[in-house]
Length: 133
Image (tube, rainbow, N blue to C red; front, side, top):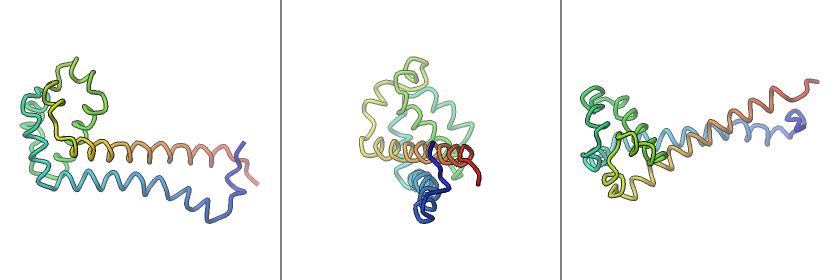
């Protein structure tokens, strides 16, 4: 078993801070995208997607919170495209023709958040499972 209590303090601190740095980097990228002109391009690129047409009137696109919510769910469609197309949420042609640089940016931000959360869970599990002195 890995005993985190025996690690040098610098390594333990780096291990503890890394998930926050990684996860918050993903949040920063998504927030930047939500506040930029690219958000309008993203919405325009998914004009045939039924789900987005239903969500925009409900959430709106003026507040940062609503823009981040929409981007997060759009990124989910990129993570699971076959499921979203099968459920009729997103249009297959829209997803195929989506700008590659924006798709990459959304996926990178999402994976940074996922990796940061997973790392945090693993770190907490290591701390909880470490024998106490």
